[in-house]
Image: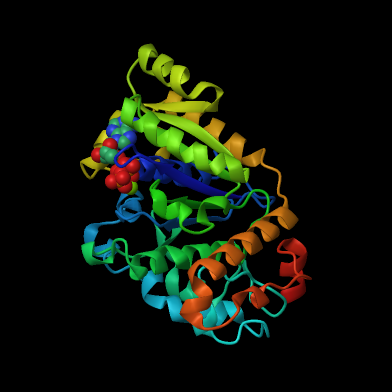
Length: 331
Ligand SMILES: Nc1ncnc2c1ncn2[C@@H]1O[C@H](COP(=O)(O)OP(=O)(O)OP(=O)(O)O)[C@@H](O)[C@H]1O
Ligand SMILES: [Mg+2]
C-alpha cells in the first residue's frame, strides 16, 4: 500500500509519518508476516524540508550522509527503463514516463541495485530521501526533478497487501504539477485545529477528489474536545482520527527517541486506526496504470514533448498493466 502524508507546513506530517512507519515496522503492532517478521516497509522523504531521517531517530551527521534520489536521477531512469523499446534513452524519460513491457519493476523489499544504492536503514525502517532542496531549486526544474524521482519509483513499484510505502510530502501546488498526488492508495492530510490548516485541507481535497484520490484527515496537536469539534465542523466525516499533543513527540524533539511502544496509548490507537484505513484500501491496478498514462499524456503535451524533442505519447504501452502479474513476469 502506498501512503502519502500531506498538510500545511509545520502541521506534523513528518512526525506522524515517522510514528506510523515505526508502528508498522514493529511486529507487535503491524500486520506480521507469516513467519512473524515485521511487514516490509519503505519510507521516502519527498518534502522540501528533509526531516524524516531525524524523526526516525537519525543523528544529524548520519542524515547528511544519506544518498539522495535527486542526485541519481539519470541512474534511476537508466535502470527502470530496462529494455523497454518504447523509451529511446534515459534522457527521453520524464517523471511521468510509465513502465511498459521491458521496464524494470520494483517490489517493496525485493533486492535491486537501486535500493542497494539509494535506500538505507534508519531507526528500524528502510529510508530513501529526495535530498535537500536549496533555495535556488524552488520553482525550477531541479526541484521538480527531485520529486520526479519519487514519481518514477512509485510508478514502477508493485506493493502487495501488508506491504507499506510511506511518503512524506508537501501539500503545496507542486504535488499537483504532475500525477504524484494520484500515486497513493491512502493520503493522510495532517490537520491542526486551526483555520489555516483547514484551508490547506480544502484546497487539497478540492483538487484531489476530482481524481478519485482517497484523502483522510488526521487531526494533530489536539489538546481537548473543542479541538476535535473544530475539525469535525470543518472537515466533517473526512476526519479519520487524531493524535493528541504528545510528550513522547516532545521528548523526541529534545533528542530522546523512545521505543515506539512507549507512545501514549490513545495515540497508538490512532495509529491503529490509520493502519486499518490503509489495509482496507482495495487495489485497482488497471485504474492506477490508466491514470499514470493520463498524466503522462498531459505532461507530454504541456512541456515534455518540447523538452525531449520526441512524441512521448508513444512511450505508453497499451498492452501493459502494472501489478503483481507484471512483477512476477519480470522476475
Ligand atoms: N502530536 C504532537 N505533539 C507535540 N508536538 C508535535 C506533535 N506533532 C508535531 N509536533 C511538533 O510540531 C513541529 C512540526 O512538526 P513536523 O516537523 O512533523 O511538521 P511538518 O508538517 O513535517 O513540517 P514541515 O512542513 O516543516 O515539513 C515539530 O516541532 C514537532 O515536534
Ligand atoms: Mg516535514
